[in-house]
Amino acid sequence: MSRTTGRTLELLGLLQTRAAWSGAQLRSRLEVSDRTLRREIEDLRALGYGIEATRGVGGGYRLGPGAAVPPLTLAPDEAVAIAVGLRAAASGVIAGIEDASARALAKLELSLAPVTRNQIASVEHAMVPLLAAQGGIDVETVIVLARAIAERRSIWIRYRSRDAAPSERCVQPHRIVQTAERWYLIAWEPDRRVWRTLRVDRIERVRSDGGSFAPVEIPEHALRTATTRAISTAPYPVRAKVRIHAPPEVVRKVFGPTVAEVSDAGGDTSVLVTGADRPEVIVMYLATSGFTWELEEGDEVREALRRLAEQFSAAAEGESAAGGAAAQDG
Image 1: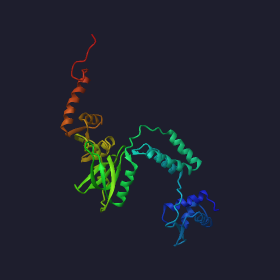
Image 2 (image 1 turned 120 degrees about the vertical axis):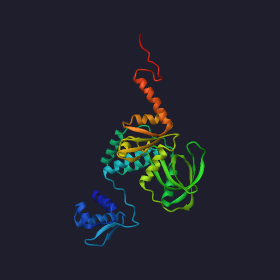
Image 3 (image 1 turned 180 degrees about the vertical axis):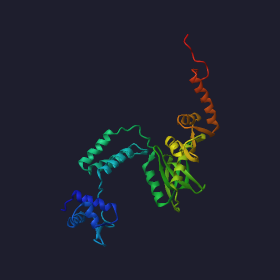
Image 4 (image 1 turned 90 degrees about the vertical axis):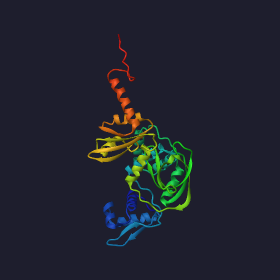
């Protein structure tokens, strides 16, 4: 039986990372002689992995097509990264993924060296999960959507909007955008000739209609803009447009993509568009931002701004928020 050593696994890991390696490159990386390298290659072949020799000066090696899938070889930091990711996924928005994450983590830990398992245990012990996001996304829905995106297949979905009854619609799915609490499907609706940003947790049913569509390249900035608008502005009855005297990269550090859409207005100023259920919410976000700003659009927000300014001024003078004099000890 061929022996499997740490060097053999290191060689396998190298072959996984590049289409082909020269013999000289492998000898240099492994710090071995040509004879030892050939022996390690034969060990891998004896274990069932198709290692092919390549032509060229000095020759080389590569993993052959159709060979048995090599085992996963991970450096300790890579294993810890995967384990932390699996733990985070268990507290994510996909319903029922907790068990799948736990099973995957258990399999991963069984294949790791004791020192790496101890590192993972230390990280897990140090982590304190807060309230998890509510898992409202069915994992099968995500799988079907991802397959349709990869195969460019149109789908029929039953979608429940924010304040309306569920409706059936045919869409061409293009991308899934993930935020901390929600996942969104970016799709083209051919019947109405509009782009849609749909919450995946509101998709109640999905099936393929068998039709295909031509691929469309959507720039990353367009994806971010469409998703930000759908999250921060479109769902809300109260909206505002604000000019802020700070560059957009600074403003975005305070107002994230789930809160507002921020664009460059030139001259170290930005335009912020946001929405909320109540105008007071927008006023408080702006008042505590630390920026100098002017409200350009939003009558409800302007009225709330005046009302709250009067209340704050009265409170600062020692009067009640309703405008009356504060009670005095006598």
